[in-house]
Amino acid sequence: MKHYFSVLGYGFEVTGPVLVGLHCFAGASPNEGEYQPIFARITVSNDPPPALESSRRRRLAHGAGWVFSYVPEKRQGYAWFDPSRPVDAWQAAAPLRLIIAWALEEIGVVLVHAAGIGSPSSGVLISGPSGSGKSSLASTGVELADLGYYGDDWVAVVRMGKHTLMGSVYRSMKLEPGPWVRSLREVFGINRFNEAGVARHPTKIIEVLPVHTTPSKIGALILPTIRKSPAVSMRWVSRVEAIKRIAPSTALQSPQCTRTLELLSEVLTDVPVYAMSVGSDRRMTKRMLELLCPG
Image (cartoon, rainbow, N blue to C red; front, side):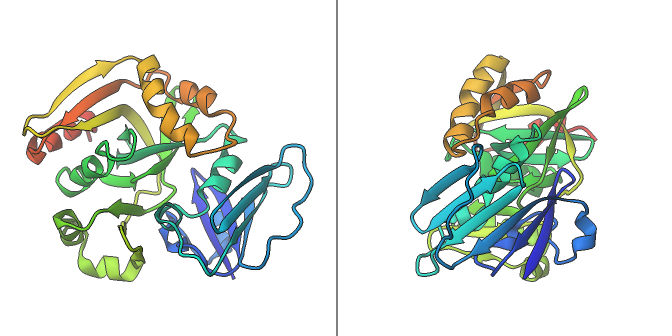
């Protein structure tokens, strides 16, 4: 069985049994013709891992119940999953992420640990460690400010000419059970969620949202923190401080991505960065996001 998806116009082919949430990919399709030429191929298997091909530049990572490998010279990835073990939440919401990150890094694209919202003409990247408010800020932008959705946890970012662009990789959003899940379903329509499917996980609700597949020009990077008061405030921060905040969560979760700092420094050139304290007043947060994403 083969599935196809693209990231910033680069086509990927995934071959093998559906062991991971392939429906979480932005623009996933069984139709090969939509994604020619194929940029990289990934083989997924639950058979015992074969002897891995020798390559000086081969990337390899493994964990409990999974092994990932990628050979840059052939643009070929391999993923093995133990069918007797449950899939981790991060694997369910962002399947095959490490292999995709390794492949895209070769051409100067970095997968950033961030959420993305906006429109093709203007968008914002929302970055920070887990629990900093990325998902809640993104859901506010989608639900109240009528902004398009580019991703909840990982977004592809690249510098092209004078602009920095972001593109969707996944259309999943990890949420704790609660009222936001119900309100998001009301915004998009329960039938659309039923059609797309919902990935199930014991501790997280992983919703599958409609996403923008057209790249967006990044107008700002937001570094959120959650505050208890209703007020929302925002201050400018330097690019150096931004890289210090964004690099650890991106780099530590992307082992063997050797160009993370270099690419982050490149893509953040000329992108204004703001630290935003997000309070409980979602209407005020909505107005802030609308100012940052005009049009």
